[in-house]
Length: 295
Length: 329
Image 1 (cartoon, each protein chain N blue to C red):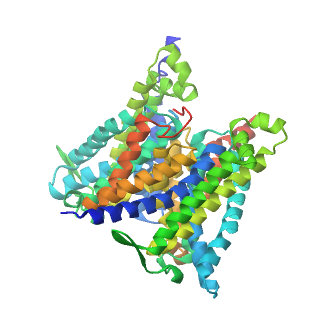
Image 2 (spheres, rainbow over the protein chains, first blue to last red):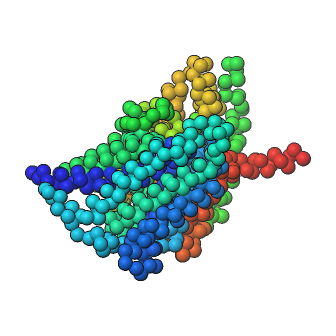
Image 3 (cartoon, chains in turn orange, green):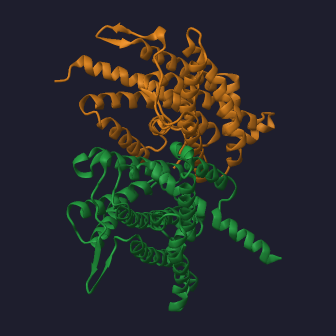
């Protein structure tokens, strides 16, 4: 009934989607691992990123405006992140986790409805960047160039972030500030500034994910962030909270499972995701590659 | 020690008086509010908010599954009324029971975890239920929802009430709400409620004394589910329509906003929060520009952030602080 190349194409599609989600989840995981805050507004940051790219494309009239927009989006998103951390989240460190969740949930609403107020609620179309239209042959099947490109770029960025956090000197400072803030302070680290910039980095990753994903979703709407947020949670929960490698693994597993489930019965793909999240949370709440013994 | 655990002994009238005062305030409220539907909606929405407060304020559990449990009650009552023409009270009881059954299952899995993981688990379950409602078109109507729920004459043996007029329905809802309020107040003052609050403060200590936190939390979760079911069943009657959006986690989020707004450490918070939320949303949506983009949610979200950051006690807590400030002087 189902041809092998159809399944293969779906698996490949799933991996591509998974890498993109892993890019978002990396930011979410980074913020959770370093700041201890689960950010319900992460999906909203993704949405802002997509809208920034759209706005840049409307305002600019240069060749390759999509890429220019994407590059402009990065520092803009970092600024958004800085402001959120500085004015809202900073007050929440050390507070009960319940209130941290509720605060970021409120932030989600505010960002989502502000975007609805500014851009309206009708879907905004965003074309494929012209240089990346068309398909490329991958042996058994043909694959859209843009999707292939986002996959490679996403993997490269995730690897870059992982290398930065786990291997570089600055990354060591970040990890130290998360694991033992007192000692880090004694050694002269300004931990508050480290937290601020970590959140900015996470926001920029979310915005980048939104910008890259934007041409693949039919039209931008203010609700896209809420939908993606739950997928991000699932990825982080599967892979392990606070782990970048976990985010990548979780993303790819989720993408493949979703892709294969979609071949046989399209509606099943969402069901499988939430069921997977529930099962992992119950059996192994720290996720596949998670470290801590969070109960 | 034992006597302290027992509920305070009050005379029958002392037990009833706060409820009578509430009734005295709430009945005329109907005539003050800008729309006739609003009064009943405020009361109905206060019911799941009460469930949220029971779990967050008194037990320390952040439940993101209230929306789906609310929807289960609404769908059960709605389907029974629209397709099988059962007695209204029976439909309400069925809705409550169904939500109870779902929350037994949901609670069994969720209460094993605390804090963040508990919240995420309830969120996952909430979306599973939403997804089933969304996909099961032949039974739930999928995206179309359930139409044709009739709110008609309620036969109660010798006498009957016509629930069609909004005022009659409001009084019906008010009676059920006040009964529920009495029950929940009694519950949190009972030894059971004291154990819940003890666990909120320190689960370790409660365990050391010899209580099993999981059993207590499970029961609290199920009671919360039953309350949500009652709210849902009444909401189906109120709207005479049930839509899948009720089960979406954003509905759970709205209950969270209402609870925090009113105050999570006191049961009256549910009513205050629900009232302020619905009144404010209605007021803001009267401006066409704002209504189109759903700006009511924007303002409420901003207020919500401020409440979470600075006024954990919500409106009730704020008023209480001001009152105490002036009384001290």
